[in-house]
Image (cartoon, rainbow, N blue to C red; front, side, top):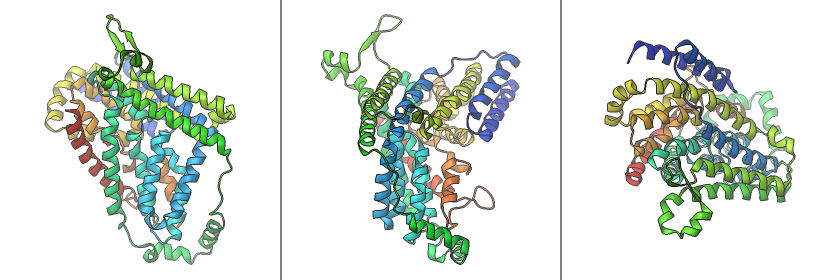
Length: 461
C-alpha cells in the first residue's frame, strides 16, 4: 500500500471520529467534508452516492413515523409494559426479549427508550439487580437490528449483496436464530452478574438517602399510568406496518421460488422488466421495499388519519433522517477512498480475509464502534467486501459484528439506562471501558458470531 493511502485513510478516520463526537447529522456532514478533501485536495474521483440505500431507509421511516403518530408504537409499549410487570422474576430474560421484538418491528433500537424505565422499576421492586435486565435489554435492541427486515442495515446489506443473489429471507434465516440464541445464552451468564441487589453497597446507601427515598416513592405512585391512545387507530396502524414488513420478506424470497409458481402469479407479485441488455429481470429488492413501505405509509395516513405534523415530529422520523444523512456522507466518503485504491486493497487484504474470515468481522466491529451506526458500517464495508470477492457466507455470517455500539458507552440507550437505574448498579466504571454493558455485549457478540458463521456455512454454501 502507498503512503498516500494511509494519509487519505487517516483523513477518513478523523472525519468519522469528529462526526461521531458531534452526533446528530455530524457523521453525514463530516463525511462530506472528508469527500471534499479527497476530491479537491487529492484528486480522487467520487463514486456514486448510495441512493438506493438512502431511499429504502426514507421509505421505511415514512411508514414507521406514520405508525408512531397513529399510536402504534405506544400500543406496543403498553403491551410490553404489561408483560414485564406480570413476569418480574424472569425480567433478565423477558426484558431483552421485549426490546428484541420491538426493534424487529420498528427497525430502530431507539424504541428501547420507552421500556427502559419500566425495566428499571420492575427489577428494583422485584429485588433483581437492574444492571442485569437493563444491560441485556440495550444489547438486544442493538443486535436485533440485523434481524429486522425494515432496518437500514438489513436493507443496505440486501442491496450490496445483489451480485451474490443473496435475498433478504436468506439473511434473516441466519441472523434471527443466531442473535436469538446468542442473546439467550448471554442472559444465562448475565443473570449472575454482580452482587444481588440487597447486597449492593451503593443501593443500600441510597436507601438511606432522603433524596432517593422520594424518588422511589414517586416511582411507586406512578407505576400504573399508561399513555392515552386511540386504540382502533393504533391497532390498525400496527397491523398495516407489520403486514408490510412481512410482505417485504415474502416478496424477497420470490426470486428463489419463481420456477415453482405460475408465470401469471409472478407477474403480479413481483413483475420482471428488461435490463439494459434486453434480459428480463425481476423488480429489484430496493424498489420492492420502497414501493411496499411507501404504500404502507399511505394506507396508515388514509385509514388512521394521524396528525400530519406529528409524523415529522416523532422520534422515529428524526432518528431515520439522521441515519439517511449519516449514510449519505460517510458511506460516500468510504466508498470513494476504497474504490480509488481497490486494486492495492484487493492484493493486500484478499489473502488474509480468505485465510482468516473472522478478520472481516473485526473490521465490521471496529467501524461500528467508531460510527455508532450499523447502516453506515454496512454501507462503508460491504462494497469493499464485494469488491474483494469475500464469499457471501462470510459476509452474511459476520454481519452481526456491526453491533459494536456497546464497546464505548456513548450510545443513547446506554446513557438512558444508566439514568433510569436509580439503584446505581448500572454504571460506567472508572476506566470507561469497564462499564455495565461490556460483558453482556461481548458475550452476545461471541455466541451470535459462532452461530451466525455456522448457519451461513450450512445455508449459503
